Amino acid sequence: MPCLYITTNVNMEGVDTDPFYLEVTKAVASIVGRPQNLVMVVLKGSIEIVFGGNKEAAAYAEIVSMGGITKQVKRQLIATVGSILHSHFSIHPTRFILKVFDMQALPLPSKL
Image (cartoon, rainbow, N blue to C red; front, top):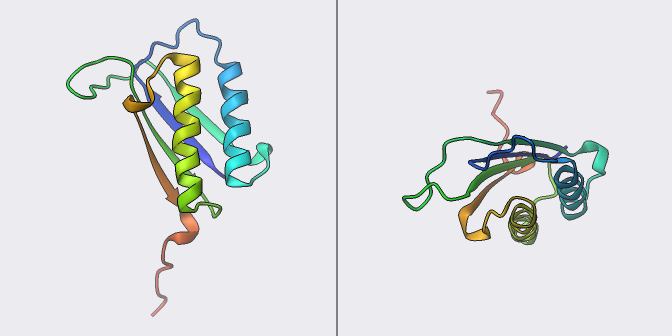
């Protein structure tokens, strides 16, 4: 179940975010190889973010998935989510950071 959590300094008040949610959910599902009904997307706008010393449109995101994350998948997620944020909210891809977690890649604690 991938979860994409995005924070941005873009004001979302009065913005129709439904097209964004549909496009990004479909993209994440396709890239990670999971059904759309198992993808969660959280979008928080109007958050104070300073990137590169200024407050121009920027975003920070994290995606957590239980498997399905490879080096190529990471690259695709960064490029695709960055492109979607740019097209919907005018956040330039160079002002977007995506942190990727694969829960299956984490070592299990020892029971000893």
